[in-house]
Length: 406
Ligand SMILES: Nc1nc2c(c(=O)[nH]1)N[C@H]1C(S)=C(S)[C@@H](COP(=O)(O)OP(=O)(O)OC[C@H]3O[C@@H](n4cnc5c(N)ncnc54)[C@H](O)[C@@H]3O)O[C@H]1N2
Ligand code: MOO
Image 1 (cartoon, rainbow, N blue to C red):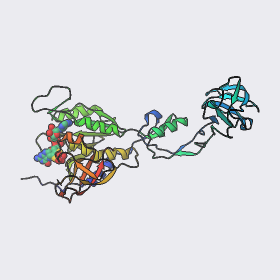
Image 2 (image 1 turned 180 degrees about the vertical axis):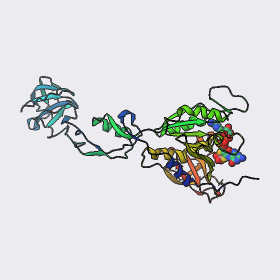
Image 3 (image 1 turned 90 degrees about the vertical axis):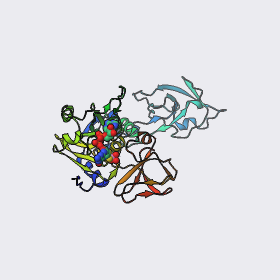
């Protein structure tokens, strides 16, 4: 008797299921340098002002502007230089009227000075300086608090920390930040036919590539990937491989062994152990599984390389980003016109690989729908989404794109 398959789950519903499986990551105070791509978990109040003191924006001379009034090339003003203030000098040396202090960029402007004359407008004198231009009051001064007022809220919880945010927070003197920590993802590929790249291949074998793709995709969003040696289609080998790693990860992602054949190692090992296997109305990526094995959330992806990659993209990536606290977990969507006609199975959302140039109105389908077409995937920068109720897209027909890369 044929298997009576239950109705496949929709992409959106399965996406919500996987989002609920991966719980919010704990908040930790991590060194600023380790926070790239993480999400700030509390508002930040400035502990100091920026700049923290009035300082010079130029190498030159700190003066009172009234002392250089009328200075010109033909009629320079000469002032005695009483102090030298390199950046980093910490004592306070007031400027007396009618004198100048030589000062460097970033050095504290002495009390009494209200203007900096850049060195190019002088004779660079050390004991006395001749100034060849009148300079307006306040020129080249960087005022205390001009950028940030001490005690003000400078960044809100939920901000994604990129280079600019991290550099700014370091400038405020913060060494550690409250963030949701990185997700630690355990990756296991299965299949007796799999051979590690770099080793010789025999007829009937293929190189293992899913773990490379999935680990890179985890790391791309700021996660930490632990890739286990792939296991053959042997249930005991799978249990043994997983065992030492179950307690120090947030999610297990497996690939392969979930469809309808005789050697479905993931299904055989995890069905009845907290993992449910089902069909999702998507192509590629139909056979899926999810659940919790020995306390560890698990997503079991299908083995075909494009299916595994797309399933990660559609279901796991947004779940991890959400758990990290990312405010937006969706890819940018673009509407474009397909340069070729395409067919799609009724009742399934199909994701074709495509190429879209920024600013263009066109989307070029790359390769066919087959879930083994890896080169086409590598040459694409977007997914072309064909809805469940569309079975044919005409040449020039409108399609929705999910941008994977700019
Ligand atoms: N009778 C049926 N057969 C299949 C069905 C079905 O519904 N009924 N579904 C097909 C679909 S769709 C997919 S997707 C695959 C999923 O199968 P599995 O998850 O069991 O994956 P495997 O059989 O282990 O592998 C499929 C394919 O992918 C290659 N593979 C697997 N792992 C890797 C890896 N880590 N790196 C590179 N390549 C990998 C493997 O050699 C196979 O060629 O099932 C269909 N069959
Ligand atoms: O769903 Mo399979 O993923 O079509 O190749």
